[in-house]
Image (cartoon, rainbow, N blue to C red; front, side, top):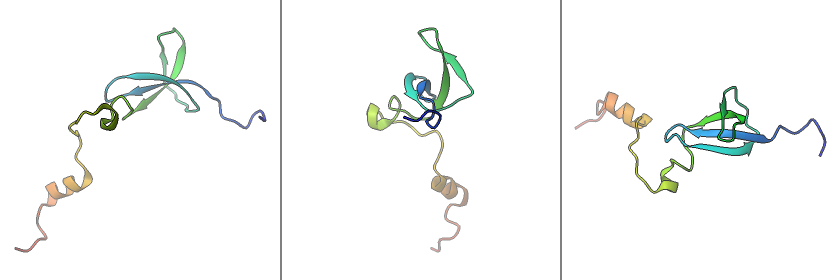
Length: 85
């Protein structure tokens, strides 16, 4: 491989913010945040909303969605104003 053209590939900590689980995986992701891992080394920290630890497809659990979808928000706000009975 040519030197200087490939991104740096090293260990990064991914934190699933919905369940609080951390993963140490090699990646090219960059982050300004750092965290000390179980082995005592400091690694970059990347926060995720969903991972395999919290996604219903992998866990088999049903979860309540905290935020409503855009269509539900629209219907809640405007309701049936435009429909004729």
